[in-house]
Amino acid sequence: MQDPIKSYEELLVSDRYNDFIKKDPNAILIACFLTNGEWQFDFYSEGKVTIFRNNKLEIKDEILNPQMVIVKLDLKKIKIKIEKAIEIAREKLKIHKDETDKRIVLLQNFKEKPVWNITLLTKNMNIMNLKINALNGDIIGESFESIFKLKV
Image 1 (cartoon, helix red, strand yellow):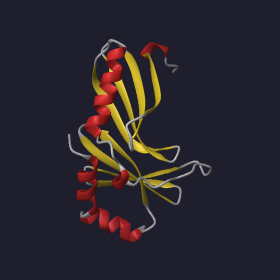
Image 2: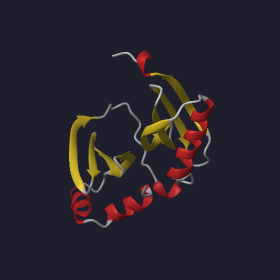
Image 3: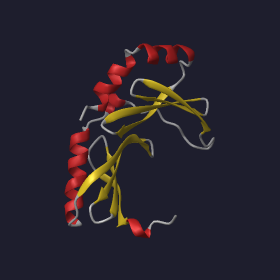
């Protein structure tokens, strides 16, 4: 699994990113999302989100909540690597005597701190979500529930 910082650095030297940032120099990185082994990078500017996935650009027309506080995600401050965050999540899952083979990983700001937001889909049809402080590895949020308890 590739480190988000390395993937981000590769994005920063790409023509597509440089064209984008010339047109929108105020865009800031707000989240990194791991999907199918590839990193997606979300940028915010003027109420809209622009997504880079597989070196392709996608502009979301949806406008974020104007009351929402948007904080730049500074990858240079990240101390806990993705492998360590996933290890913390797997150790926590052992307490529930469950296993996973599906995960959703998001690196984002939560209460103005960088956080690994990891959701594990388990073999016993449960969902565990952990929010792990990306500066020190502390668990700052946790939930574990049956998928059947989710409201549709």
